[in-house]
Length: 219
Image (cartoon, rainbow, N blue to C red; front, side, top):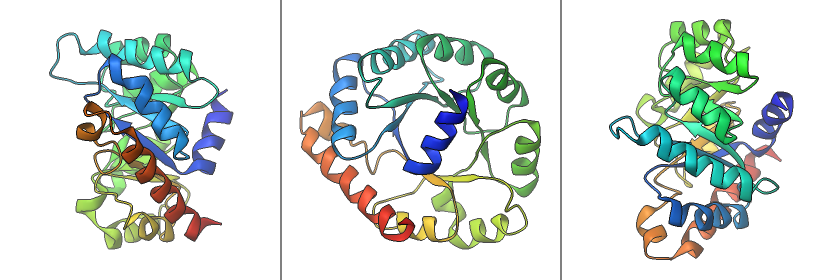
């Protein structure tokens, strides 16, 4: 299964980042993303919420069980072993983190789950990959900038990178052109205002735009 998820990420190249969406709206959001051509959806933990582990696991389980043939669900902002275990039991197929936590990377590998830690520097990226990360998320990509990521990727061209943070429909092609394997996209795609007002067509339309702009430079 892990191999198939890695191949799916490499093929699809875009992971939708869902944060702050409740159980009532999570499945319509997933369906809207699917209609727009996106098949990977990261559901992020809220570190401030004392009930966040349970809540997020429930959301992951809803998507994993109801959208199994459409959406490959993963867990985001994974920073503890407790979160790893809860996400795994709920059906998450990949763990994405904002940081490099060796214990989280090792736990993902123990569970047979794709590991995607977040890194900023060459040392962090190399250490994460050497510890067993399957991809390394360069975060925050928008603040780092295209030139930084291009420069970092040159000597570390053996590491599969994802660009996350500050990626929009208008600049996603620029990130793909410098050789990243894919991108993670949050607020510029998963518009919570649109979701809570029931305007899911906006999500679908934006998803189609992202997919089109990625395909322009990868096909």
